[in-house]
Amino acid sequence: MKDFIEWSDTLSVGVEEIDEQHKGLAAMVNEMSVAIDGGWGKEARDQILVRLIEYTRVHFATEESLMSISSYAGLKIHKKQHENLIEIVKSYVKKYDEDPNASSYDLLFFLKKWLVDHIMKDDKAMGDYLVKVGTA
Image (cartoon, rainbow, N blue to C red; front, side, top):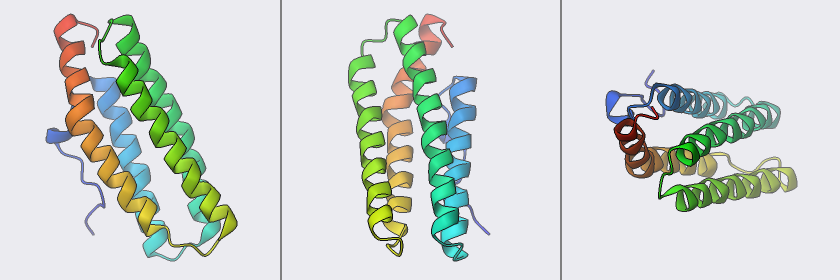
């Protein structure tokens, strides 16, 4: 069976720690996909979401620290994108709390699109900069 998000070198940003964390995020989204497709229900979805949110916070802190210590000009905008994602995911969690039977597919597809788009555009630019200045 094919992963919902397939990791490939095209998603690499050139910074090993960030790439490993991105792989972890993709694996959690893939786990959520399997859970949804398998009908694991609200409890499994909620457990995965809690882990995903916590892991995302750690990942964002890693990226933001690297950007800060390397004086990355795009830090403020990049950090705002991270904050916006957290708020959107929180809104999905609230929706699921209010309606435990709500479909999880909308969140799943949103996360895939956001993660891949963010990596390919914003994180690659950050990774290129970190490699260039030697922070990576």
